[in-house]
Image 1 (cartoon, one colour):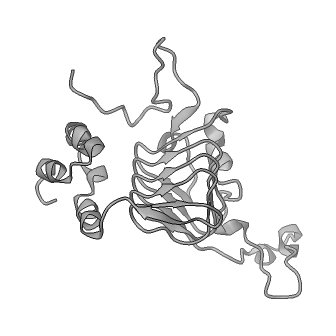
Image 2 (image 1 turned 180 degrees about the horizontal axis):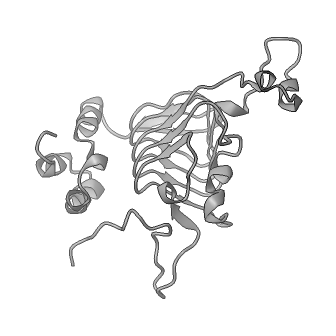
Length: 219
């Protein structure tokens, strides 16, 4: 039977062999409704103690409130394991003076409550964030990157890099530079879902030539 892509509109996309729904995995675009968080289709998160659907934003980005400045932008087809946390710039304290104590948080004057840091955090497409990874404020993670379990990502991660450790450092590149350029040009994550389904074998086998041959016109 030909492979068929899962329904991107489902909240819980995994059905177990007994026919029951696995509530520990969600397509995030269908459960996060926060104006400063953007999540692409098919990006999922898994948790062994899942929150209710409306609690996923607070679980993954605990300091990123609806009124926070800056954005958390997560691409398509990302895979987010249990314990991953995005510590966005809204968590930062001002420390240029003699204290880092956030007096303004306790003031009624809205001007006193202004955030000291409003930079965005960007996660590319097809990024795998392993168990317990921590992404620090204003970091950008490139397409196809893999973030090792327990990593603390303090600086930007290039496309198709594997990083691990605290602070996270590049362990290896998944592809040579010319192939990374080809992958970014092909941008398979933006293809129609039926064409992604047909490309599954090439994607899993790492056959870039076949993937290129299956690309929509203009890619």
